[in-house]
Image (cartoon, rainbow, N blue to C red):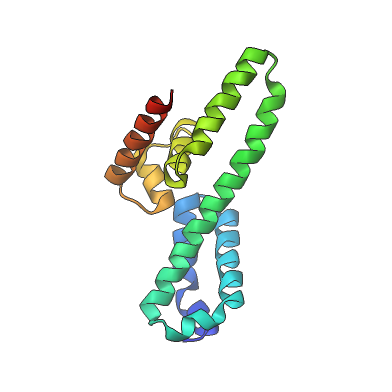
Length: 151
């Protein structure tokens, strides 16, 4: 199956999936486009894959591109927030919290940020990262335990 056939047969499915995890048509389109660019750059990896594996590769790539987007924008927002802090003690506290978050494993850190900074619930987080709500709650609980231990 070549990339043109994948596009013809599955593009709408990829776009619908991206929309479901972003709730933003433009960003969903960008995520799918980025996945195709990555596919073109690595086209030879598809030679040994079954069609269902290729489809799974696209869904995983779209999910990962979305996580990368969230992380990138989180850092930009975080830097701008530093300039708004007037009190030195508040600044030091913010730096300490961010440092603790950075020490968390990536999967936990992303979910903590989604939960507490973006006010997302376990179902919404699960939809964005491709996990069940109960798994998200377990990861959040584990992450909070690590943070408490590090305090």
